[in-house]
Image (tube, rainbow, N blue to C red; front, side, top):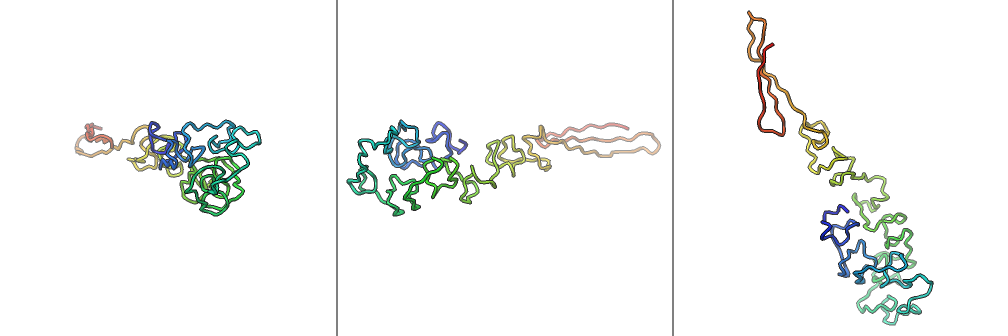
Length: 229
């Protein structure tokens, strides 16, 4: 997912999450956890609605509340239907506890989530395009997947195409030895600079002697040779 975290240690291998946030400590990062705030390492989701069984009111999608959520009771008055959590709060005061609120800091009592990415439309930076990671490269509050002003990064070298001197060859250092605007990594080889030095002309002779120096920017050993014309 090109988030700078090796897959071996990445708690969301297919969703970029460089901060590796995991609020419920179940080993699955918040960016890809189907029950953020509820430990569920196995991520079981019987009805494939992207909401894990452990926090799904109707995990078999039969139109009936599951037994543990029967009648939608909130016996502990923590804003979460039959989920024991005495510390539960409702930060945005929209009647949906933070524990189950898909926009815990933005009031959205209807919990509308048009693209099904578990971020409510009220706080989703691309409300109509699925984007679990909510990546926003330029920080304009418009997610990259729907931002027309964000250039892609085809070679995944962290330099966007519109600023990359080798957009299809990874070169994070953007080295451009000859300064022609094309990075060394995709130029085949750096341009060789030729320097000629006039040595001697014999006015009475019909020849002149030259020395040619060939310098390659990637080498500390220039080549030189002489010739006569």
